[in-house]
Length: 106
Image 1 (cartoon, rainbow, N blue to C red):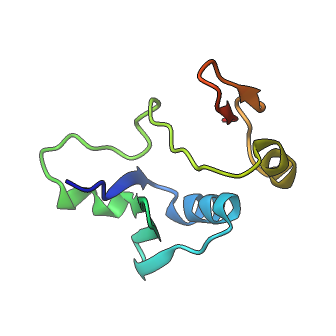
Image 2: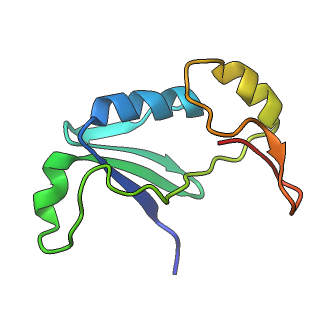
């Protein structure tokens, strides 16, 4: 088995794509107006507009309804990334060293 992707469903597709393009410094592929994806060697971050929900009938999926997912990106220097992001993103947790040794921010 190979990890393929994480997909987020949103009613604000363009805004979310713009956010992740800024954060990652990468450009998403846009095969159509309701779907975007950032393909990396480790997996894909896919973002679907809420117009894609009818493709998954009976699943109970709803746009922007999950508050327990964390999408992580590995960087060389978390503190430098924090400076680069500035106040253009909402930071939930300033850079901190976690008990297992990772330096992280949210």
